Amino acid sequence: MSKLSDNTLSIICILIGMTVFSLQDVLIRVLSDEISAFQILFTRSIVGISLLCIYLKYKKIPIIFTSHYPALTILRTVLFLLGFALFYVALANLPFAIATSLFFTSPFFVTVLSKFFLKEDIGIRRWLTVGFGFIGVIIIVNPTLDEFNYYMLMPVICALAYASAMIMIKLTSDKDSVYSQTFHFYLTAMILCPIFSLLGASLGLHTVENKALDFMFRSWDFTMNNNMFIMIAIGTTAVVAFIFTLNAYRLGKPYIVAPFEYILLVWAIIYGRLIWGEVITLQSYLGMAIIVAGGIYIFYREKVNEQNLSIDKPLR
Image (cartoon, rainbow, N blue to C red; front, side, top):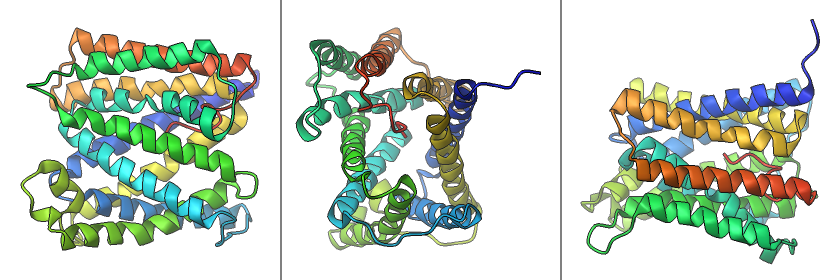
């Protein structure tokens, strides 16, 4: 029996990683009516840092508590937490596939930001592809003055925040390893999540009759019931998916691995239909196809130009 190539193993890893990430998204929607988004992120961070420490001890990799870039680490964590809190709100209030596809605009934002912050050379083809991709966003959102769904903006804002965080990772990777960056993120998130929730409570945001604000800033619940076990499962799936995704990018060529992240969108369509009975319009499918095609073309152009702006880190 012939041994599987590294690229084949990387594809298997990324498919498993994205499948586990999709399960995490399902669990987040299940909790969205009862548990605060920041409590979910807090619990995810506790589970994440615990499992990460076990993994680092097992691999005999030193745990480094200090960062060479503390300010950028804090800013990166703030962007990630606020961005994904909005994404969780979108998951709870939009069709699953719509929220997921709009998040996949992140490669377009990475391309734009890399021009200004990394001084990378972006050719006309990728600029046109970015514009093409955002046409897909407009097709999905279908904005009208009398009937605009502001939840549609939340995955796009999350994609922008996430892309900004990815640029910061690129800027700090010369001295902080991926394990150190992940450890610092979890540690900072454990501190910031309660602060964000307390700040929201002090401003009375949890009492406002708004579904988004209620989900983000409602009171935390530490009752040992099914919700607590689901939150622990969310944290566990996040770490498992991260390990598989990280190994996918370690084993395979980034331009080969990255397009397979879009299997997450396929799972989102399936879960939305089977669990919640969601029906996606042909117009939305067209917008999704444009976003996916644009993202894959950006990955291809980066491979041609021997750049790794969008594809040397997973989209989740």
